[in-house]
Image (cartoon, rainbow, N blue to C red; front, top):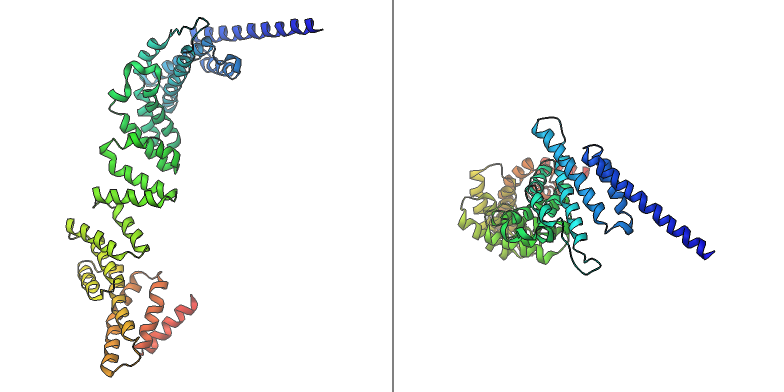
Length: 399
């Protein structure tokens, strides 16, 4: 019985081997005749799914030739201005390189005699070196199509060629000036996908691309924020502001962070540094005014806001900060238990001065009821403005 089973097992192996040889032979015949090339590639790919065939050099070499023929056919059609899918051609470039790397990996294994015979490396590397730039161009092409995941894989493969033994003779990591640029675009794709792993994967190399360093800091900062890594987020936007103080991304986020944490002296410091570089910058002066308000320096805040309003009478936040400065002065004075007539008049004067600013703010920001509703309610009440008080009371009740 055991002998019978052994015979059957050997027959199964022989039949399988014969079927495999026939499949390889059919594929090579199709490749030679330039027909059914995708079928030839797929049949070899299916054979490689069997772990027993994983290191079969003939299968890898046949699949490589099938992909090369497909590329050549597609390239010829484009050259002759015939209809052909450009994306498909870029994908064939990528598959040529990936299959060649797989073949090279198989050949790099020592044979039974312990020797390594690299039959295809030099020839394939020379051939693919000419087409490797298509990985970079294909990545840019796919970015324009907003296919960021696919574009990322192209840049990733382009960069990885520098680490592949197949291309060792070209030493891409040292000689290819586009490597850092490709890494930047890979980071960009990861950022657009909101994929931290993809964003960070080529960061070290991408930061060598000085032309895009500013944008790199932006992508990293946003990714750290997505990861809720506050320490690295603040470190990155701080570096960004130090290197590019007038770039619109870093300043508002740095001010927002310190403002939310109540460090208004830091906000003031940041704003003043930006103002020194660009004295007419509205956002920098408005941030300084807001810092002054929160530090209780109301007169300084009002002076800055008045200047801003004079230059731009549609700046809602300038009206708000100035109006709130007068409002706060009134409220703080009104905290005194004993007030003389002069002080009471002064309080009313502050409310009167706050009113036009906050009325303008309401007109410019009608949806911000949480900010102007109760404030105007209080002002109307203290100034005995019955009609206006009734109107704002209805607004608040409706809300």
